[in-house]
Image (tube, rainbow, N blue to C red; front, side):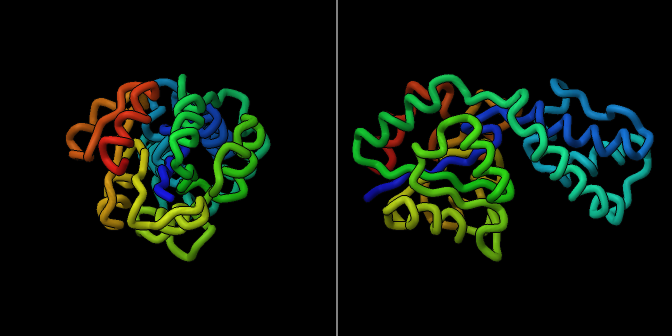
Length: 220
């Protein structure tokens, strides 16, 4: 079976609001107040928890790697407690997933979000059952951009690692697909959409409505 593997944050769902809220819990504990803005800093949020902590501390001239390490578990706990307050699936995402399945593709998720959090979020959103596989940041000893999580997601979705592609929203996703020797499709509707063309993926996706056709053109 050929498979289509999706990144989660910024690709299937806009998770930035809940991620920033969790980071701001940490900054308030540090006495800095709400450092990150849910709109202006959405792109930073989708780079992950450590990146948010780093960016906020740098703004106050207080960056220290030990502080990031200390507060990262605090951020994860805060995020777990309010993981789906603001998060929404991107329009048409699940319709595209169902269309791909109807067309005979296996579908899965490969994310750098910790596996348990990704499982919780997809379950809360009511769509976990639509994906045959979910590989998170800590599922394997390595994470994206190492190609092995993508390959494992393809295998768990019932496919062959060489007959897959990755739908994502970042240089991490582009580099993961490149390392695996498979195509990538980068979405342009996320916070960093205007930067995707410069990464030269095999395709850009402006709307989920077009995804089945784009997938067929690349691996069909």
